[in-house]
Image (cartoon, rainbow, N blue to C red; front, side, top):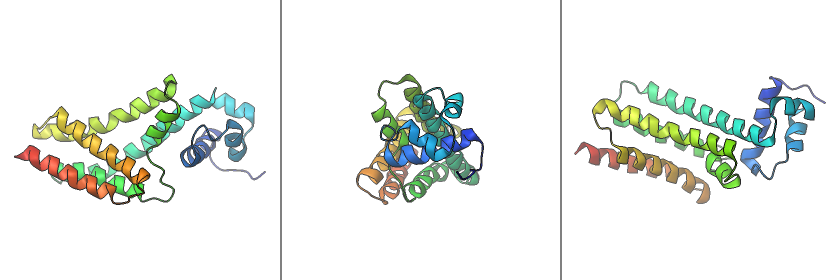
Length: 189
């Protein structure tokens, strides 16, 4: 067996991420994750007590990766008006949906596969909280705090993510960005 780089935990998470996202969580057995990550079963269970623990950590990792990516882009536009910073979120979404192997929102997929598992649902809820918080934080300096606008921007983002997968539409993020521009322009009037 070829020696793989990274910590055992990282290898398990990288393997789980690749397989769960590409093929579905229930479709991938834990034995396959173990085999493809090159660890023993006992080592896997020393890091993750159950498959669901691994699933929850996979979701946390995906969420953290996207947060960093979006935050980096928003902060790079720090000198821009708030509108431009908010629209950059949709630019990142366009990059994501244009990547090879895009298969929709990992959190929507996991929520559908694990509708009643507490740890998985907590990981989904944790991810669902960051985007509204970001939009709220960006809008607040304008005195434009508006829960309805925040909710609308999140729904536009979610709709673009779903459309990109279901319709195989790489244009959905561009449409969402234009819709967000309209929402923000209406708020300015």
